[in-house]
Image (cartoon, rainbow, N blue to C red):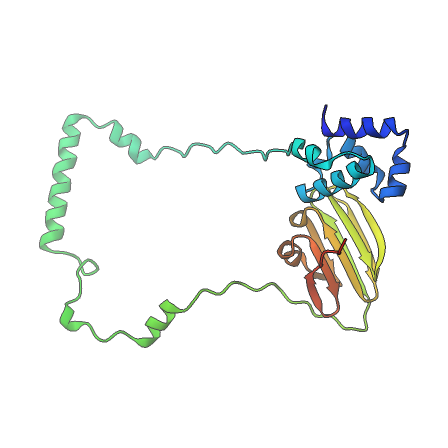
Length: 247
């Protein structure tokens, strides 16, 4: 029996509805339905799926470890790479007869001989006596470490309210809190757009941060979502990683 089937069977034995489970565990009904139909793995990242399975299993007095071990994750589609086109020059060489191969080899020998006797300017190497001391600027530029590009900064006034716009490129799960109050905890369908406001701060959790576009007061913040793995604390002072809550 699948993980979802075991959860559904255990809930039926306890004569509980999805509304009963939601009231006790705070897990949304659509998440419970996806769990029991073994579809949640296609909607959320493994860390969120394991968390919901653990909470649901403990509520039903089941051991979550064997259930998590049975979870199966979707495999990414590997697009078949097309074969590189055959160069026309390679086709021409394949069609050469032995007589033409001999002529081509003779032309190659003559060309190499001319290059050795009278090399072009760009091929000749400068004499060691003409080499000067290396420039310090050149040495410095070679040894200069490569800098990692910084994430864009945001310019916000402390007196203005925060307005967050979320656009989903693919279906994902999202949780939004404004000034400590839970605004939403839902599945955001592909192409959906949502807008929320806050006075002081947002607490944002996105299961697929690379698949959403985030705009704060007209300024894009998607790179911050990727850098912080979809756990964001957004204030007027900047954007940092949302700390995990202590159990």
